Image (cartoon, rainbow, N blue to C red; front, side):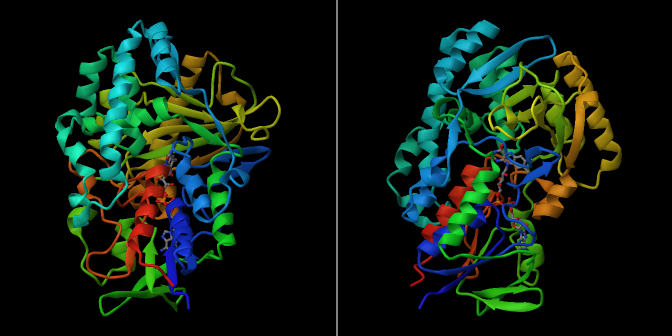
Length: 490
Ligand code: FAD
């Protein structure tokens, strides 16, 4: 007889955990508050435009593919994606622009052409970035940091022997300034701190690992846009026999004699041998485990940044733009100080524009483009967003008009918005953070909540707010670690 597992939440890690537990022999029921799956990976459709509502950058596709393989299916029959040749187009106020590639060679040569920095500088940087990835991945990302056997594993030895090359005691900005020197090149590589919602002037230099994914391993786009990740994994989970219950917010995790016993949903108890929470770890403790002691040090970690996103259906085409575009602020340090220390957004923020209609036919009507326009912001700490949002919108429109030499506002024919408050209300992400806790502390990796409860057996945690961190790849790895910790269900 199969044992019963319950997963709370259908974010990408919740769905992946459900798939992994079904493979381990469990009967799996997944409860989701919303009427739709995917959490942050969802989509909006309005008047012929389709927008990916959340993530736009896709790396390490094998982490999605391996879920199909695990279930005995051929991933290419169910999940198709394109390989990008350019990673991002960068624009500065002085008219400089640069198209970075998805290989070390193309990026190095483009940097040499646009900024006059010898190609060897970026080649060396990305070689070192690959080294840091190979040394940190097996220990920091692929296993629990909270199990003794992780520290006894021989794969830890190379990591320890090269600890001096991991830049743990410096900041990303200091490492980049020393290695890259050119202010615009430093700004490009400082930006990778935002890939986990952190501040390059505080996050440790080990984050030099992040560009390895984009410039050595490549970037991708699912054929139907990012939302394909959710739809294809939900379909796989359903083929595996996972039952999805929508409009079903879990209000309590049931505990019996220090063991997870199930959940309470809509006043009804559902019993299980294993419970996995994909809800953000802060509300998991504050709401679902409110009568149990909470790990206050872990829960009090500074949160990652949040964002303001404008989804604009643009009646017009822009040949100078690609799938990913960045319009840099003039004062990057002031931008991050405002986000992380002053809880505000500066008047000249860095603007990210993602346009999937460049690659996905049908995402916008003919002659039009679907713009996802994002500005990093602090999390919701009670700021006056009704005042802030129109100010940011005005500043973004002015900046884009300046840099693209074309009025944007008059081209907007569809508009939707996502705010820190909406991110929290739609996904339970504490303060609307995009990536759980920030990595602004050198010990951040050790201060994330483990993927299991140290006090309650049978209770596990996955998703961007727990180990190993936020973003699609790490959320998928959290589910993989949960899968490795749960005992077989038959
Ligand atoms: P979440 O997506 O947080 O979903 C949690 C789910 O649990 C939700 O569906 C919620 O409704 C449900 N839930 C919560 N509480 C309950 C309850 N009590 N009962 C039932 N259900 C519950 N990552 C990248 O890799 N690349 C990017 O380019 C990128 N850009 C981003 C841009 C934006 C605007 C945002 C918001 C995020 C971005 N991210 C990006 C981060 C990435 O989306 C997340 O790290 C990842 O999707 C988190 O997945 P998760 O499994 O933690 O679940």
